[in-house]
Length: 80
Image 1 (cartoon, rainbow, N blue to C red):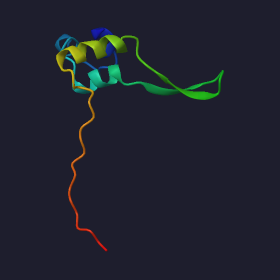
Image 2: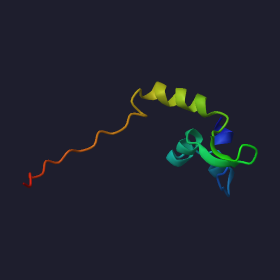
Image 3: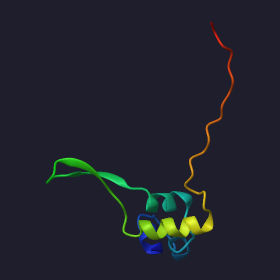
Image 4: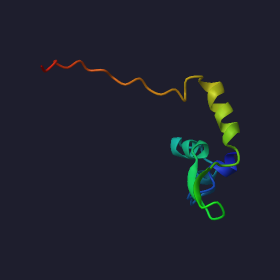
C-alpha cells in the first residue's frame, strides 16, 4: 500500500524514498482519475488498487474525514 501510494515520488537519497507520506500522496491514493474507454467510447473513473483500504484506514482515524464542510452563511440586506 505504501509503495503504491509513493510510487510517483521523486527522490535522491534512501531517506527521501522511505520518508512519510504527504497529504497530496494520500489524497491521490484515494482520488480517482478520468480516462477514456476506447471500447465503449465513454469517460470512466479509474481508481487505484488500494483505494478501499485507504478509505477504511482514514475513516478509522476520523469518522468525519470525508464530510463536506458546511458553507458559511453571511446574511445580506433584502433589496426590494
